[in-house]
Length: 271
Image (cartoon, rainbow, N blue to C red):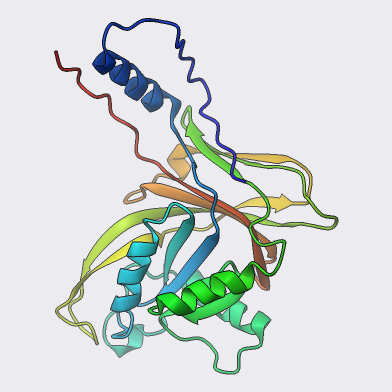
């Protein structure tokens, strides 16, 4: 279960504020000062390997946008670059995304190799990225493994820091790598060449960097990163992944959380 803390909230609910509007203002201001925290228990981490140069990908990109609105799903776009030669250089692709997709393929022993749009679900099962039924089946399949998303991570931002907490393992020999992923929640791209020439496509939760926080060996642990190292241009949210195995041989997802980096704004009181 995902635990959430809003550190330093410091509200005294016994104070009479005189009106509901004033109380709403106090809450908004306090939340703005406290920062953001992850607030849902994920049942799935979906990594969509997509490309701006792939004509089959736009339906998958749209589906990921819908999945991203599910508070129990952490949906991430991982644009790849191996279709760039077709005529359009993907503006969001990171070389490491193709490497990650190939690593998943090696672990599963896929004969067909990699393709787009491909969804990897909970680090363990693959599905056609544009097929909602296939993705839901993969989610169910991965939960046959009791380790899947069994570790309740907490992720919060406060005092210009991003903090991740992991509890003790629930079973012997559980361990994994902890990765922080700054993301851009919605990026609109006008594609000028290639298979999607003339189309404008919105990419949801596009991963912009991978920051390795460290190893989790089954004991309680905390990692802290300065917010300025995470919130670079275009980044407005962050996800954390606790995954068994290694980057070269990724295994099932043990835990995950995601939170916005947007600061809540005070609400003006009306009289």
